[in-house]
Length: 94
Image (cartoon, rainbow, N blue to C red):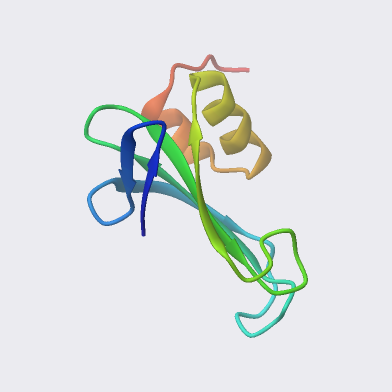
């Protein structure tokens, strides 16, 4: 999927998907939600989001740029994508 947002092209074909999340519903379920985190060659992160007809996405797809690293970190923590967090950001041992 491609989208131009504020003059910048975001393209799932040319960016690297570094993490994903889904709500565990079956692919055919109208409540299915999928989010994929991408990193562009220029170092910009964006979410590619899509889902079932009964959700906020209403069967549509969308791209949402993440403006700051803290937003990316927050998403990675919330979706329990520890490996991607470790690979892309600094962290300290507990």
